[in-house]
Length: 382
Ligand code: GMT
Image 1 (cartoon, rainbow, N blue to C red):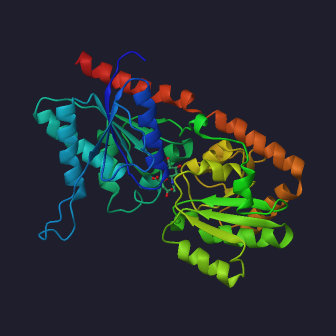
Image 2: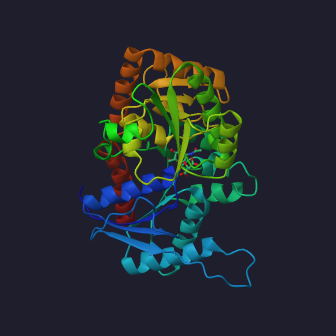
Image 3: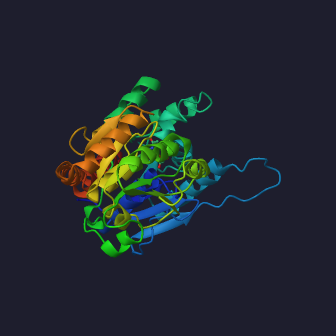
């Protein structure tokens, strides 16, 4: 690309798709020669790469007894102003509406008082719109942040529609789908690793999430119980969060403790996905379902719900099978169908891998580059 930019990236550092996308985007941009400044309250969990083009600025939140609630958004805003001024950022790309886009819009206005213009790109990831956005107490702030950003992107067509339906949006919203760095994913089964979890004749079913309510992790256990009655299999539950305890209780109640392994948060999931036969994602809603794409890139077939943007990733009858939210009977039947028919499973797995390749980083990165360059160009012309 033409001009090398100084790009600020704001994201949540925790175990979640938006942080993963933002981190991998920043790393890829730095590899193209741009200078990338990550700004967050903790080091993003996949940012373990050291490069002279990558910087990390931590937002500290002092604990003043005066405040009942720490004003993180204000600390973030001040940090954005400081980094933009002193590092001479050309552009700020914020992931998630609250508080990142709203802090960025405030920072932009403060910078303007110093005669500095900083274009803001906001990427909406889903829960900021589908869950938080529907909370009336946040709606005006989210709407304002969207309308005051210089460019807004969403990660799927479904999220674009939902955003336009729910908010009074006065600007163009572009769909830039999430992407995958195919070089990180392997499709080779590590048999030694696999043997730690399942016997050779057993199938391996996997679920990965942050175990929030929206992920419906109890449905994963219910589906597995039905599958396991017919097919020798094991279930791996990867990740952690508020609903884990309920899923564990259900396993105890159903007598599945020896068949379901809860592994907690794992940093490296590629090897685990590569040893899996089927990945289960029964979410209530999912703007995209990055983890399903990661599973597909690891040659795994997907059983999922059809809600939100999942059907843009998991293609019905090709890469996996989709059901209505909560229809555990159908999701179990679909899993059994795939596991009983080795030719079908093989076909779905290879279709999944092929479809994942269409989301390769090299296809998506130019879309963000074009947005950055056009905003910087428009700024120069002023
Ligand atoms: O799903 C979560 O709980 C985490 C959330 C996030 O903000 O990281 O994920 C959202 O963004 C991901 C990356 O764009 C998408 O792949 C997820 O589908 C989306 N989650 C929901 O819409 C529930």
